[in-house]
Structure formats: C-alpha cells, structure tokens
Image (cartoon, rainbow, N blue to C red; front, side, top):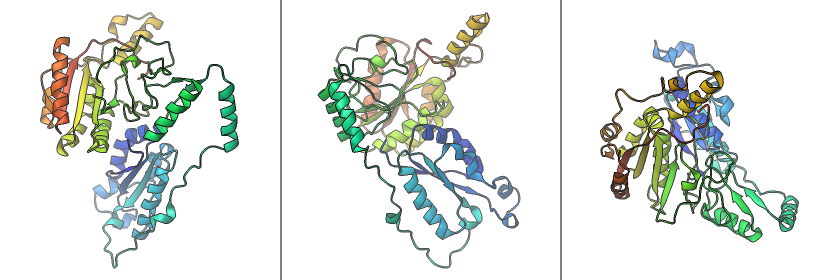
Length: 396
C-alpha cells in the first residue's frame, strides 16, 4: 500500500511455517516486509523440557530462504539491533521482498548489564536507483517519436501520484495505447481514451463495452477482486484505485490483505473494499477480527457461489480431455450441507452483516447500508449469492 514495510512478529519455527504462504505471496509481489521470529535456545544445554526442544531449529531461515531477500540469526543483543536495522534497509531496497531476523530465546531472556547502543540507521541507508541510463532513455524517446502505433504494456509500477501523472502525460504525448492487467495494482486510468481494453488476467479481446458512466465511491480502494471479475467492470482513476491480486495465488490471503490495506488507509479518507470469494473468505476469515478490534473502516463483499468453483471448472476440463463424466466435477468442491452462515460468522467477529443477499433487487440497498456503515468508521460485510459461473483459470 505505502511502499514501506510493516514489522510482523511470528512464533518460532511453527509460526514461520504457518506464515510461509503469506511470505511467498509477498515475495512474488515484491512487497517490503520485516519479519521477526525466534528459536528456542540454540545452546542445547539451556533448553527447558519439551517446548524449547520442539521450537528450536538449527537453521530456521532455511524454511523461507528461497523466497525471502535476506535472513540472519544474531548471537548478541548488539548484533540483533544491527541485524534489525540492516533487515529494514534491505527489504526497502528495490526490488523489495521480505527479510527475516531470528532471535534466540536464551538471548531474549538474558539480563542486560547496560543499555546497548542503538545503531546509527543513517549509515545503512538503502541505495536508491538513479533511474535508467540517459543514453537508453534518449534512444527510447527517438523510437517513440518515430512509432506509428506505439503501445505501452504497463506492469508493476509505483503508486506515487506524480508517477501516475507522468505515465498519463507520456502516453498522451505519443498517443500511445495502454494495456494493463488485473494481476498488478492500478497503473493507468482505466476509462482513459488511450486505455481501450479493460484490464484482464490474460491478454485478450475486449469482453464488452465499458459500463455506462456512473458514480463509483471515487475515494474507494479495491483491495481484492475474485477471479470471475470481468475487467470491463473495473474503473480506476488513481494509483490506489485497485491493488491487484496476491503475488502467489495463495487462496485464503484475501481477508488478511483486506485488513492490512484497511490499516494502511486509516485516516486517508479512502475506503478499502474487498470482493472475496466464499472459499477465500472461509480459509482466512478470522483475520477480520483484527479490523473490528482496531476499529478500521472496511467493507468486504463476499461473492458466494457455494463452491471452490475454480477447481470445478478445471475438473470439468480434465474430465472432457479424459472422457470422464463432467457431472462429477463438483465432488469435493461444494460448500453446502450445511451452508456456512457467513453473516453470523462476521457478526461474531465484530462486523456489521445482514442476511445473505439472494435477489438482485436487494443488492443496491444492502451495499448502500454497508458503505454507510464503513464510511462511519465501522466494519461491514455483505454476503451475496452469485451463480457458479464465469471465467476461472486452471490450477487455481
């Protein structure tokens, strides 16, 4: 959201294992993150029975080393302070990725004889890019000046408003068409004349004409959208209009991402709105308690089709390839018998939530009430029954 890292503390090796998918998502999405973990006493003679033994690992950072940027296990309080400062600097350096510092439990419990010196973080500043080579920029400019039909394929970019304005100005100067996608955050106004095709997961023909102009909560921030969301329905005019999907397609990450965005947006006047699938919400739904606990304005809309439908579509395709009955594709994927009461679940965690919306005519009023609640500083959830259809990519 901000381009700056939050610090997250996790519980020893088991906490690191539990967090590994979230760390992988952050790594794939180049998110800065400082992770502080711990291990039981490395010195076996200092381990207490049971818990110290099962929560001690010889090289705990190895669990995530292939999808983190740097890790360390310091051996003294002074070294720990320096390690944390270095980890913070490294995770902020582009391209960003999580860093991990593991603190020995015996080190944490060791009495201090004096206050350790705080490291000078000014000496460990992250190097900043000075931009591309001037000769390469000049050459690219000449090519653009000569291009008859320039096209910009915009991927992961800065959320800074000035950078956004420069991108728009550059495209307008050269009359370049712009293509963006749904896998990364907003990079260009989706309704701009030079952005003719709706953002989508894969490069394809425009699915349909853009929706009619209407007032869309301009100060909203779409945190997440489900896979079945049509790119033509996305209208953004600000770098915080849409944040993209999770980096590694880790199902269950949606609720946690919604809460994190709500925390980053607190006090900004921009309302975080997350449209989540029911499977994604059920896997990580307990995260929303944090938003309610800290009174973070947040609106979650659950597109509830009572299936892990992405896998249903994939199994239908596989059945067709293998000459098997496609009617069996729902087995093991249906979220029914009993149907989860998502509204009751959300209310138990401190959210405002009504009964499931099953009629299209009731949706505008339900959304308006939820938006009003969120605008007033509360957390709200709207459970919307949707048809189990639409696009789904295989293997998700």
